[in-house]
Length: 234
Image (cartoon, one colour):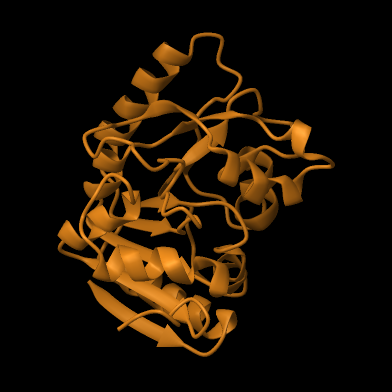
């Protein structure tokens, strides 16, 4: 696990962009993408670049159950606004949060990942150590699955909704086993609210109680943190 400490979110996002560009130069074709505030500046770097994704594939980590294409708070809408509308991929996959049969949707998404192994995966980390929507206690052996979101995750995400009651309580998420099959992983973390989780991820024991700790076992992980997120690192 390589740790890169930066002064600002903007600087860290440029580091992540350089890693992305390097992966493309080394023939990466499939990109695992994340949503939320953490990768926003990273996507701005992409939009400002001359990179062309018209022959590439993207696979997103997750989507809220009950939300999907056309819903303002869906991750589908987020990705279109922050990346896809200006930098389209040959194909972009997200879980269908509106699927009438979530069991079938989980199997469909697993097959997509199997058909398109991820070369370069972007991650954030939750305050409780979740990656994707793999909450504490999630099995390291899980592939795509339906997740009951914890109260802390719902609270953290409520800033994107008019009121906390509007936040979905479930999501379809790529599993930890699927994430770990990615050839290269880049995790970004900004701000002191992430400091405890970052320290435990890097210096703590590998435990399902802190899902991100499994990244210690991956052979090609880069963690990019600003000063606040790195405050508890040894």
